Image 1 (cartoon, rainbow, N blue to C red):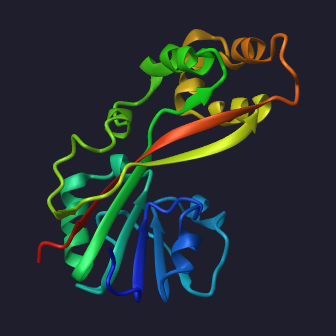
Image 2: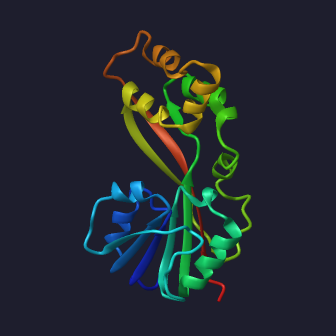
Amino acid sequence: MVERHDLAWDCGAGSGQATLDLAARFARVVATDVSSAQLGAAAPHPRVEYRVAPAEASGLDDHTVDLVAVAQALHWFDLPRFFAEADRVLAPAGVLAAWSYGPCRVVGDGGAVTRFAELVRPCWPPERALVESGYRTIDFPFHEVPVPELEMSAEWTSEELLGYLGTWSAVTAYATSHGQDPIPALRAELTSGADPARRFRVVWPLALRAGRATG
């Protein structure tokens, strides 16, 4: 998909969860985020430069970036301004790739997590709708590159699964608005009569949109 591997821009890098994977493939990576605290938690790497900068003003030179990567962050950006910035910095034949993972499906839970997700769904911020659509409702002003259907999966204990679900901002918002944490009820449903060592297969659809620079 990418012809050169000189420079990648990890935009909205957060704590660098995707950054190090990019550093394994590119000679240089610039990882930006608006949160200095998030970047401060990222692991150092000799080929990575961390910068506090908004997605819409990277500070990168014109037409120098081979890949603009956005992992689970595109829905937070001012999209027209970000797309203009990405087009400005992308090298000829450079690629913008933005990916997100949608609601998870849990195998063998009797539908408990699906019901839980529906319970807290009204508490997600409006931007969540873009994630659940796989970014397909976004006007994507690049020469789109076809991508295959993708998914991620993990094998988790009930406590690992509950720990993940507890990180959802919708769960925190639900607890605040209803005065009750919804996690304990789900824990009881997942563990009632079950082997404590039981593991659940968790599957996320992975949505990717990729396109080449228009310039």
